[in-house]
Image (cartoon, rainbow, N blue to C red; front, side):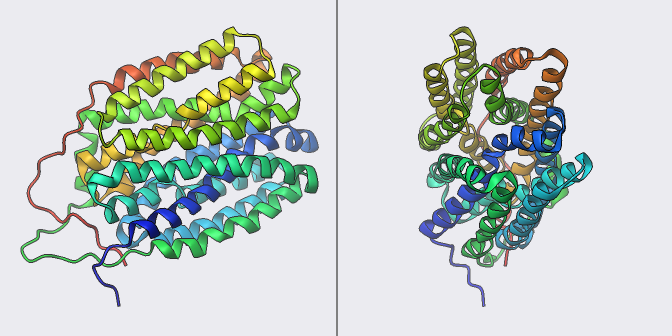
Length: 408
C-alpha cells in the first residue's frame, strides 16, 4: 500500500547518484573503442561516429517518451527497462558484424537505454521529492555523480580493454550495468496525495503547448543544443585527435578521466550556485568559458601538459550546464511534467550531439583533420552565451493545479 510520504533526500540522492554513475560513466568511455573496434572490423571512423550519433539522437528523442512514462507511472519502472536495454545494447555492440547491426545496437538500443537511465528520469524524482530550496543543489549532486562515474569508469574501461580485449570489455560492462535495476527500486515514488479542492493536473498536451510557446524555453533549448555538440564531439573524438598528433593512448584515457574528476566539482558548484545566482548567467558564463578554453587549447603546442590543463578546465565546465538548465525548467513550469519537459530540452542537446559526433567523423574523413569542427564548437559556444542571457526564470502564473503527478 502506497502512502503520500515523500522519499527521503538521502535515499533519492544515493540511488540516483549510483544510477547516474553507472549509466553516464559507461557511455563516457565509448571513445576508447573507436580505434580498436574500427580497426578490427576494417570500418572507417565515420561508421563508428555515425552509430554514436544515432545513439545520441535516439537517446534524446526517446527521452521525451521515457520522461512521460516516468512522470505518469514512476521512474523505477523506466529504470528497470532501461537497464535491460543497456545490457542488450552493449552485447550487440560487441558482436555486431555489420555497420547496420552496429548502428542498431550501439546506436538505437543503447540510446533508448540511456533515455531511461540518466538525468531526465533522475531529475524528475528529485523535483517531485525534494523541496524547491534544495532542488538545484540536489541536481548538482546527481550531476556530480555522473562526473564521478566518468572519472571512475573511463580508466576501468581502458583497463578492461587491455585485459579482456575490446569485445570482452563490452560484455563485462553489460553485466555491470544490470545493477541499475535493483537501484531503481530505491526511487519507487509513493502515490501523490490529492488535497480537497485540487483541480485536475495539467494534461501532457497543454504542458507541451505551454512550454513551446514560451520564448525562454526556446532559448534554453537553443543553448543546450550547443552543449551537446561540444561535449560529445570532444568526448568521442579527442582520443583519436590526440593519437593522430603522436600522443600516447594513456594521455587520452587520463584526459577523459580528468574531465570526469573536475566535473564533479564543476557540476556541484553550478548546482549550489543556482540556489543563489541567476541560472541564466551561470549558463552564459559556462558557454563563454568553454569557447575560450578551446581557443587557447588550439593556440598552444599539443603536449601531455596542455592536454592535462585543457581536460581539467573543460571538466569544470563539462556537465555543469545540466543542473541550472533543469532547475530553470522546474522553476518556470513546476515539477508535474519535469521529466517530459526535461526530455524535450535534452532532445535539443542530443541533436547537437548527433551533429558534433557525426561531423567530427565526416569532416575528418573529408579533410584529414578536426580543425573545422573545433572552430565550429568555439563559434557555437559564443552563440549559446548570448541566447541564454534573455531567459526569464520566474514561475509561470496559472490557475490552481496539482503539484505532484501520480506515480505508483
